Image (cartoon, rainbow over all chains, first blue to last red; front, side, top):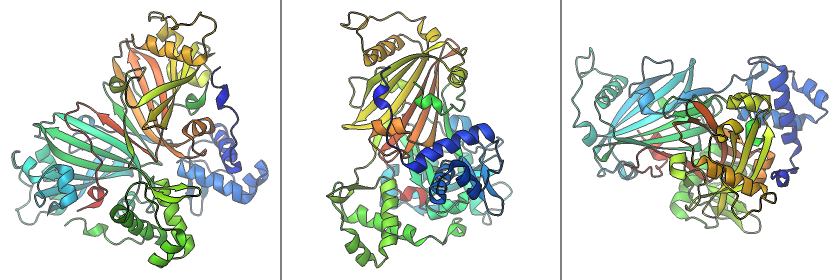
Length: 263
Length: 263
């Protein structure tokens, strides 16, 4: 019925096997369970080891399987739904199940490119707060939050808690910037999401090898008609599902894969 | 300044080369330009052909390079920003620069999983409209839009334009469903974005091999306190940047890569 022209497409062998394996995983195994080893799987599905490995690699990349040294290959937990919106998170993002943790803060003059992205003169002081986001005990995202000095300047200063002044660490400085941002009146948020790869420093924080696929979320916060902050967050693509709730009227639940292709 | 602990991480050789190549692409070449062949590049950067190929594969996956048979490797165009929001697109999504085109419509009883996702009894008739989205002359997304009969039933029927009745094709049926949806009062949208891979039928429409990385956008539309429609859209991850504008106060512009890691 109108989708007949989409039928039978030539698929590589490993891809066919991936689909068969996915069905087996969904029906025969539960989260955290160890699946049979490569030799057994190759025999069961009557395929070459190389083809099997390609299919397993693919499913690992998709976050459906996890390889653990000395244990074997496990069925991965479903992806974690992480709400992406300042309204839901707040700037400090604490006191929630999914927390942001400040790991550093740099205060440096903006280079040409960053200045352009922030709409400030080159050389203006920019606070860059480095954070990680933890969900279910796992680091799921890292973030660089850039705030130009001119945007912060209008906000009341917050004393560093318990610090004598000079001895405050960079993570404390970062938290002070976030607390000042809590006073900011945000008029609008613009956001984009795209596929990226983890750079070396991000990979280290995410405990993944460099080149791991990530979802890069770029958010521009407007206040009083100008850009007040720019956040670039990188989420682990294998374990995260980003959610954007508008009203909370309906909750997005994971949709079965068949809903994409079912006719 | 607080990011010192993130310094020097061991990176695989191809990954270092990727970063060097990326810088060369950004500074020496422009969009659509053919870069030197593998032999020349391997000599210039003093690396093995295998390492070079791995780095080029990586950059192709990231959508920075495009290989064209008989031409060579070209610098890819920047990703296309595609707004993701019904408010911006409208249901029919026509008359815009970036258009949705209806390619089919299936009218079938909902299976167990789809019924559960839609919150209707198994066996209820569901209209599934198949669409593609075209931006800058290229198919960037495919979509399955599921609408249960009970949600459509409350909306005024729209006559198929110019059709005698029985002879209407499935794409015309699909457009009729979309026109009826235009009368729907949507109280809220919930959305999720995650990384996926193109299944065979999606890959065919996107003109990419099966397994190509895609961004899967799942949207639930609520009307009168119930789920009225469920859209599952798959966007090409190599060429698309999804944008979510809240107010249009600020426009998200592509942010230079350094904004992620600059300290």
